[in-house]
Length: 139
Image (cartoon, rainbow, N blue to C red; front, side, top):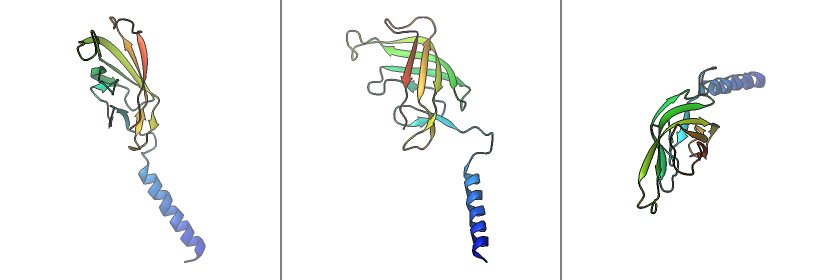
């Protein structure tokens, strides 16, 4: 085989291998959300305060997952930290979440949402705004 033909065959093989590794055109890429230590697919519980687990959202029901934004309803749980966080009590509040800003992350190389906005629907902890944005670290 001539050099040009070998080059053309190698190029065709490389392109075929690359195409096989990509999702089909129009197919959504699987998106994850880091739950402090590992990326999870549409988690039912999301810890927002990883260091002390004093703030989290549970019972999450997601819609629009794998899209530019994913939305959910669930229960926001916050420690009152009264008289201190070790002796505080956990209070629950109805909440809506929006996850966005997906990017491919470090070690996992998975596409992950990196921002979550929590909107409290009704009652809320004293001093907490109705909407709070949380940066979700890539894992």
